[in-house]
Structures are given as structure tokens and as C-alpha cells.
Image (tube, rainbow, N blue to C red):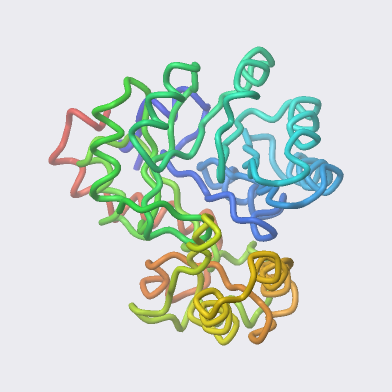
Amino acid sequence: MHMIKSAICDMLGIEYPVFQGGMAWIADGKLAAAVSNGGGLGIIAAGNAPAEYVKQQIQIARTLTDKPIGVNIMLLSPFADDVSKIVMEEEVEVITTGAGNPSKYIKEWLFEGIKVIPVVASVSMAKLMTRLGASALIAEGGESGGHVGELTTMVLVPQICDATTLPVIAAGGIADGRGVAAAFMLGACAVQMGTRFLSAEECSIHPVYKKKILKATDLCTMVTGKRLGHPVRSLRTQFARDYAKAEYGGMPDEELEALAAGSLRLAVQTGDNEKGCFLSGQIAAMVNKEQPAAEIIKEVMEEAEPFLLRAPQWVK
């Protein structure tokens, strides 16, 4: 079962065109290594963590796999500059970026031989990243968990593919072979899955968090944070409802930011329903079993193959 390969597999030295999303405080060295060992690209999330944490996770991943790994740098992080240095020192193969514009870093990363793959949520950003020499682009629709844009995956991916000559990885709302096949039909040559990997055995989120994902329904997520300009999709928990009430109830911006501070980490580490923010994509309702990361990758690729055999121009 090696038919579904693409330009991104050759570029990165991976077996299957599957990325694991860079989910803050969730995508650690253990999960990234499991995904890379399974033939995909495992990605460590820097999030708002200090550089020393990121370095530790990279080193954990290196002890568990000899395959390529990536690091996702959240550009809003106060530690972004420090994390950038660490990733170069540790000779990580791939950098993905989120929540911002990576323009000031790209030249240096490319000079170090790192493949730079920014997440883009608009055609204008895709064109800018293409001009600056990015290696590929992740087109992420608003169905995804965490920081989201306005456009849906179905609308965004073909427009990004038309706007760039770079390989495009589709993200947002993909959790099975049908989603993979749809992404390829839209012109992508790989997919990124986040929420599906929350169910991986190697994902170390709190059992309460994992249980919420496995029991999720179709209308289980909501978006908060639009007022501050950084919308985030998460499970519809007591915290999310309280935050939405505060957001549209006139709470000052500073207090609103303080309300969200540390909430994701609480969810990941303690499963706190009252104060924790449980990031999740809309696809959570289709995630209903816990299994090894390698099995997830194999399963979605096997599901996608019959569909993609009808599209030989994308499959070699």
C-alpha cells in the first residue's frame, strides 16, 4: 500500500503524505516521534512554551525516531525568537508556522537547510509566502481546532492551489480516507490532521480530554476570541460558554485575555472542565476510537486509496 505518494513525500523523506498538526501543549516529542515512525511527519508544537521546553521535546523525539520531524512555531508567542534559534541549533528538518506572519525568519531558516511550511488561511498570505521562498504551504480551513481563519477547507484549498506553484497540504476537517481523497481532488498533495491524532495512544492529553473527543457530536465545537482578533475553535465546555458570555458581555480586553491565559494547558494536563480550553476541530464527532498513531495513518491511507485510484494524475 504505497501508491499514495506525492511531491511532499519526496521533499521531506516521509512515506505517507500525512502531517500531524502542531497542537500547543499536546503535540510533544512522544507523539511526533510516533507519527514519524508511522510514516507521516510528526510535528512538535512550540505554542507559548519557552525554548527550553521545545528543546527538551525535540531531544525526546530524537531518542524515539530517526525519521524527519517538524516543529510548529506559533508566531504570537513571546518566545518565538528563542524557539527559532533552538530549532536551528537542533537541526530540525521542517518548520511549520501558525498565528502570524513568518516573513522575518524565512530567509534564515532556509539558509540553515530547513524546509519552511507556513500555515496560510488566505490567498494573499499564500502568495506572499510563495514569493519569500517557502517550501510548501498548509492551507488550513476554519473547521480546524485552535486558531482559525474565516474560509472553509473546501473553499480555501483550491484557491491556494491556484495561487501558488508550491505543494499544498490541506488541513481542517480531515479525519479519514474520504477527507484525504477530497483534499487531493481539490489539488492538495498531502493532508494535516490534528483532532484525529488526539485519539492516538501516544497522545498524552488528560483522560478527560481524550474522553470528550471520543464522545463528541457534530455540533460539539464553538469559536471564541473573535473580538480580540484571534478566534479559537474548541469543545463547547463550561469554560467556552463562560468565555463567550464574557466576550460579548463587555469585559475589558485585558481581563478577557487573562481569562484565557493558561486555559489550554489546564485542559491538557488536568482535564479541568471549568477553566480548561479543550481545542478541537469540527471533525471530532468522527473520532471514536483510541489507536496507535501509526495505525491511524495506515487506516486513513487505506481508506483513501480506492478513491484516489480514480485520479491517477495525483497518484504515482
